[in-house]
Length: 371
Image 1 (cartoon, helix red, strand yellow):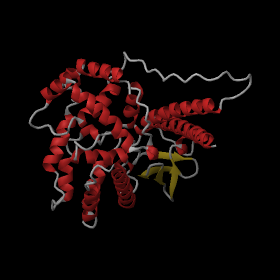
Image 2 (tube, rainbow, N blue to C red; image 1 turned 180 degrees about the horizontal axis):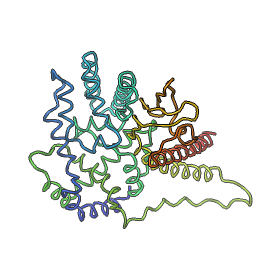
Image 3 (cartoon, one colour; image 1 turned 180 degrees about the vertical axis):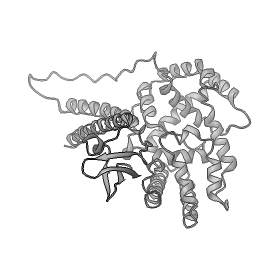
Image 4 (tube, rainbow, N blue to C red; image 1 turned 30 degrees about the vertical axis):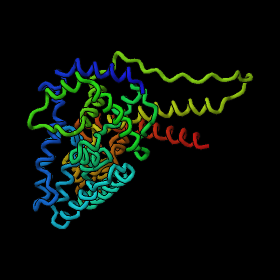
């Protein structure tokens, strides 16, 4: 890890500290959210749904955003009398003590996500904004035990890793390693503890309504997040480690290790680009056209009565039909006089094609590396 780069980022963070914590940016809400959660969390509450809703009410952009509302999905499930105890038990399992065993912790997170999503699919079908992922469950753990966990936003975390030249890749998606990510964060926390100015400045923003016993773990996440969002790395140049010298090759010969390294580098860049495109696609996840009047050349005029993640059900005078999104609009099967919606469907279609191409390219490179 390049500690000089990390210290430069910390200096940049300190210079922008007041701006980051003003009433426009409000980055201090991380500590407010954790304090509020711990004050109101009660696994034994008779009304679990209401308790949970109140406990996470200050999380703001830490978990939910305008596209996804996973905490609302938990509330919906817990409000069902037949599911209340199931949800309570799933949180009890997620928050189970593991004596620092991150392998067990990662399994519990993945198990929680799979079970919650299975229930959402069964009881809240089509409400994809309620879907949970690894980051969501990890956020719940952070709210519960902030001194033992680190929050995660994958894109910002990997960007930070590159700029501090941290060599151990903690991966993406199903390949994500909690242990490797925490190991990087632990090293950042050590540097923070040694920085008197940062510790003093951080302490100055904490009020009686903010978490104070997180052992700087929230500060690590805040540093990672703010570095990316507010471009606190602008005066840092990431330098790829130099390759060891090689013996001169014969003309036309190929160094297998060099080819593999090149493919790995291309693969990393494509995964970064894919994450960026997926984030852009995610802006449309809560785009609803239920109730929209549409026209079909065979069935005539109809109204969209149901919308799922990738399809809609349209009620016509004599029949109801299901169409795939966004291709039904792109290919001309469905039309609407709303030009804005037609343009949005075109934009979604372009993004989906781009994502498909990138995923195909990534799979091909991953297959090539396995050979």
